[in-house]
Image 1 (cartoon, helix red, strand yellow):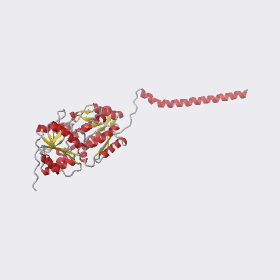
Image 2 (cartoon, one colour; image 1 turned 135 degrees about the horizontal axis):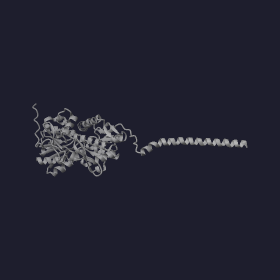
Image 3 (cartoon, one colour; image 1 turned 60 degrees about the horizontal axis):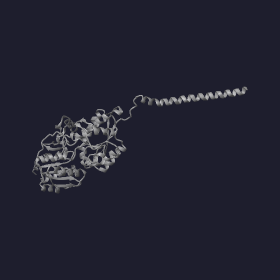
Image 4 (cartoon, helix red, strand yellow; image 1 turned 180 degrees about the vertical axis):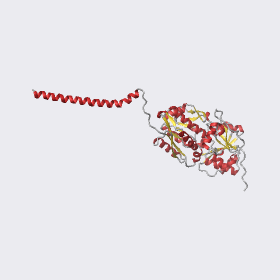
Length: 444
């Protein structure tokens, strides 16, 4: 009996120890669960979670640093972002509420070598491999056409600069992340030009254009706008991109007797066309060229011979104190004939708009920023600034934000002589017609 009781007692003690062990390990398990759950309960009670970690905003660009479009990079958007980014970073960057701090800007920039296919490949690389926070475009109309569908495929905001096209208008409802900032052909350069020329007395025009997307568009829109105001087109000739001898075309334009002459091309066409016209003594009453004629390098090349030549313009330092300050930032002490009167104000204004959009929405989320672009008005260097959205898609910078459309070289200054009736337009000189004759060649 004693043996049996001892056995029972030993069994009881063993079971008691097992229960204690189970209780002990259960307490440990409950403690671990509590430690994991406490932050969740705290969040439910309104405690703010730790913000995500991010230390910069990364900007991606494929730009034509080399090749035939490189002069546009050097004189167009290039000086603008080279001044704007350091200015923002000097102030600590852009405040993003999601991260609770200002984030400085960092640029990743590749050379697309003025090649559309290369620009397209690099755009995809910037999105997928470099994972940039914003895309800034390359520097031509054809590049924008290549980049916009890629950006929108990945729901990635694309801000564009040198380039734009009326032909992209029909596609914009399906390109919700494309925001076009430069004025172009019928937004509203050629309508303004046609009205200005018709008012001055132009009756006939001879048109040349580069055989690419840019030239085809300007030639087509020019045909519509000139016909609208009763200006007859006496010639409409395409220029192959590799054309070297412009004399036959200039001679044909001269023989046509047209009052006005257009060269819708890039610097590779604008410079030799002007030089050939001077050499052959072809001096139409009105002449518009570009892009290219709106840059300081054009005046540097031709000096007084530029007098009366027109090109596409958006600003002049005399238009407002803000634009005067911008010219000081971009060009410092350079004389006005070394400045760029085309697009810099629109580019700077669109960058300021982007900065304010991020600060308003408080995140770098692409859709959230895009929706602010599509709906908001901000005050920028352009004054009241907004975008005209097509459908529920992409947009053009609203015409009301344009300070000008057509410029003319007068006494070494690129004056704004044409613009619309919208609020921000400010002309700085009257249009001279007919343009003065080329200066006489110096005696040998």
